[in-house]
Every structure is written in structure tokens, then in C-alpha cells.
Amino acid sequence: MISRRNFVTKLSQAGLALPFLSGLKAQAMTWVAPPADSSHPNHASGPQSSSSNPNFVPVQAPGISKLPYEMDNGVKVFRLTAEPATTYFPDMSDPHGFRRRPIHGWGYNGSIIGPTIEAVEGDRVRIHVTNKLPEPTTVHWHGLHIPIEMDGVSGISQAPIQPGETFTYEFTLEQHGTYFYHPHHMGAKQVGLGMSGFFIIHPKNPEPWQAVDHDYAYFLQIWMIHPGSPIPDTMEMTEFNYFTMNGKAAPDIESMRAKVGEKIRIRVANLSMMSHPIHLHGHSFRVTDWGAGFLPEHQHIKANTMDISSAEVRVFEFEALRKGKWLLHCHFMHHTMNDMHRNPLPGSGGGGHSAMGHDMGGMHTWIEVTA
Image 1 (cartoon, rainbow, N blue to C red):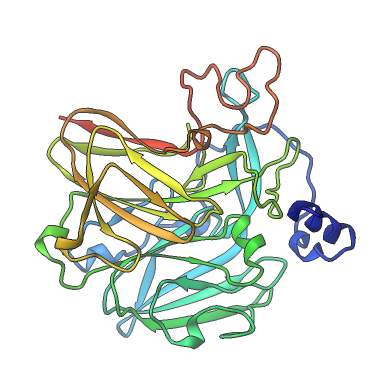
Image 2: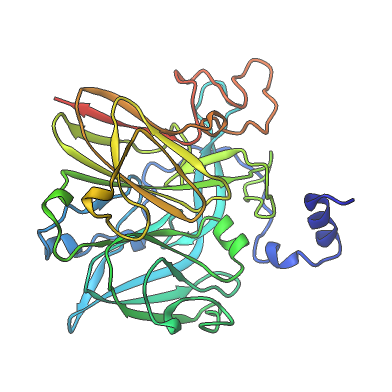
């Protein structure tokens, strides 16, 4: 009998897994502080849908930019660039918590996760996708009702976008809800290197109950980062040692803010290879969207923990009831720790703990409620 991992290893040794490794240049690990300003030239602010439609609060994906657009004869025109990108994970072998590991992956517009596309039901959108990767790619608009020519599956609905080329996707948004985009060419590799982002569509005529004071969004990913390597192992299928939200691992995940009495919406998308039971401390919430648009009010489910499987979305809504820093985290406890693959160094906190003044890493953040 041969295990799945040994089977993949044999393929690699035979040269059959080389496409997974193409375009990735091996680099020596260096320990650095992340840049104080990680903005990218393509992250420049621009007109957003909220400025022309007062019926919704703009979505905030903490730590992730919004993709600007221009208007062209009534069409919202976006520009998305697939390209290498770098994020930074905590080095949990550092007992002081200062070191960060540069992780060289792929993303959009210089970012892992890619910038959030935000629009309104009924909008016509045109998205120019430029490929600056060393291999072909596509973009699939996960969950959207669109013409087959725009679905982004190489060899079926379109020819792959070659390096240096630009492909234009254009379609009308016939639905509302929380969706996302990702490649559908060499998906295990390209998604595994970080390529994904939110596509948020607000209702054209929202119901009164859909109004909120804050609208947040978090994208879940998991990674295998081997000691001494800055490149994610996209061939790993079972063992992972970093768990992230919006491309960051705690304690670097940006948190949320609210005031007592405000109504909060939190959108959570999972494109990892595991499910994640997301739990909110101190509050119960209503699940208002299962990934295909807002549910009728009578179908909402009250809960404080909700499992989100791979490729699924859940949307939580609640009223902030009391002051405090209330955790939002995956309740697989190993998913709230970083780099458990590494053996602790003598005198250090090691894989799950450190002397940073916290005992959690991985997939957790919080909402701070003030008076």
C-alpha cells in the first residue's frame, strides 16, 4: 500500500509534479520586521460604490484594500493584476515576538488576500485582469450567475491568460450576497499560494433589517511553511502550521471596532482545505447568508458557533451588547496556534506559545466594543 503523500512524493521524484513548482524561485530564509506601510501602488484609493449608493455601509476587510473603479458609460471598470506578493507570518521560535517570516506567495494587486471588489445588484461590471505571473492563470467568480464565457475555467470556458496578457471579464450582477474570486487554472498551486479575494454585492433595494452600522469581512486560509523556507508548500494536503485571516496570522490580524448598541455584520469566507467552526465570544448572532445571498428573515438561524467548510461563506449579524474585547476565532484550538510543526527552541515559547503577552496565534481576532 502507498500513502497519498508518498504517491505525491513519487510523482515529484518522477518529474510529474513540476508544474506545481514552476515559477517559484528558492530563496534563503531571512528574518525581518514587516514593513510599516505594506501598501501597494495598485492600492490607491478611488471612487467606491458607497459614494453613489447610500443604501449600504461599505464593507471593511481589515488589512485588505478596496479595489477602486472608474465609470465608463454606466459600466464599473475594475483592474485586477495577478502577481507575486509577500505577506509576513510571526516566527514563533522568537521568545520576544518581534520577528516575522516573509512568505513569498502569489496574490492580486500586490496583496494576499486580493483587494475587495464591492458593487451593487444590477451593476454592469468590467474587470480587466492582467497576468504578471510566470505561468498562465484565470479568474473564477465563485458563486456568481454569469455567462459561461466569463466563468474562468481554463480549457472549458476560456483559454488561460498567458503571462503578460490581459483578459477582460464583463457581466451584469444579477444577485446580492458575499462571494469571492480565485484562479481556476492550476488551482491547488495558485490558490495555495494565496490567490483569492472577496466579491461583495449589496442588494439594490435592501430590506430594513439588512441595515447595519459596521460590515466586516474575513477570509480564512491555511498554510504549510517549512522551517527555513519562505515559500508555501502547495503540495501539502493534510498537515498545516499557519492559520490566517485576511492573509495574516495572529497577533497580526487586524481587529474590529464597534460601540454598544451598534449592529454588526461579519462575513467569513473559507477557501482552505479544512472546515473551521467560527465562534464569537459574549454574543449570539444570526446567520443571515449561507453563501448565495441574504436569506429571508424567517430563515435566519441563531447561534454562537458556526462551522464553515471549504469554499463556503457564512454571514453573522448581532447587536453589540456590552463593552470589552470579544474574541472571534476558529474553535479547533490547534488552529489558534502558529507553527506547531516547529520544535520549540530552548528558552523560547515554541510552536503554540510565546512570551508576547498572549497565548494564542493562528486564526483569531476580536471586536472591541466601547461605550
